Structures are given as C-alpha cells and as structure tokens.
Length: 41
Image (tube, rainbow, N blue to C red):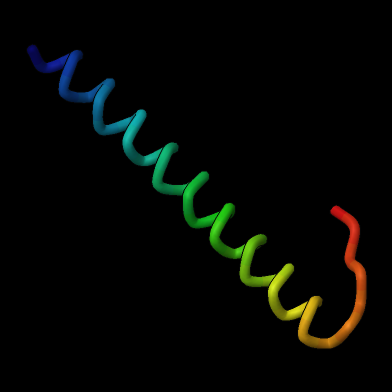
C-alpha cells in the first residue's frame, strides 16, 4: 500500500501545480483584458 500512497501523493502534487498554473494564466488574461491588450500565450 505504501507505493500506492506515494503514487497518489505524487499525482496530487502535479495536479495541484497544474491547477495553480492554470489559475495564474487565467488571472493574467483577465488583467490583460482590463488593460485592453491582447496577450498571446
């Protein structure tokens, strides 16, 4: 059961990082829209 728990923790950590990155990008897009600039990427 130890390897399984380690796997779940690793997967959860990666998902958490991806979620944070997504939220940051979304926030950047909102800021860009407020400034009236189109930002690619």
